[in-house]
Amino acid sequence: MDNCEMCLYYEYDEDYDCYRCGMDLDEDEAERFMTASHSRCPFYRPGDEYSIVRKQN
Image (cartoon, rainbow, N blue to C red):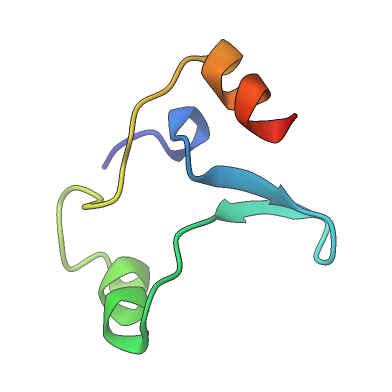
């Protein structure tokens, strides 16, 4: 599995006070993601901490 913490889509959700994947998954994609029926996240985009901070501004 890819490191979600280094993914560009890993973002803080203020409503739930936690980090989550920011991809808009449909029901089937969310089920596959939650049951880990794949070895790698198909949405993972690597990003260094500077590109992640620039995205948040």
